[in-house]
Image (cartoon, rainbow, N blue to C red; front, side):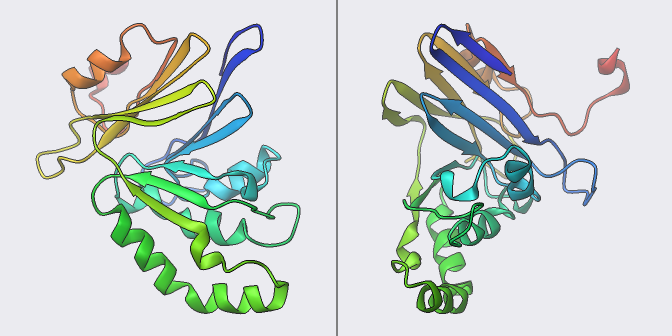
Length: 216
């Protein structure tokens, strides 16, 4: 999906729209948003790295990852994106830190990933003489509000209603060049989603379970 006016373009690519079912036909949740030569990945579910490479986008070019929430089907692809993107190949060559924005718990998850893959990182650094890549995974715990504002691109996080037990699930709105897109994240009916989606050019609304009559 391309939203454009002259050179002011927001491009949205659905890399994965699946549920936790390990289907080969529909990979896990992941959406790529491109604006002003920046690449933003929202969620990193199963197969996100393969889908990026199918788009001829090297994993090392993804330096901004935003998580809607921390369920495994939305995060299981992070290690692949991070570590494969560090390899000195056409599909890797990351030169900047992989920045991860997400709700409470993101810092602990990132810390755990670093601990889990310290052997891999240490040996690959020794082999490739690269910078210490442990430092190339950086977490940011977010609250509702503007979480990114650079080069004319503004990304706003807003709370949605995932379930009774989850009160830190987010949707995101991306604004650039007078255009906008909203990503709902996993949510039930949400007045806050309606509020932040008013007037947008494109709304990407995730739906996992739906009544038959609502498909008519």
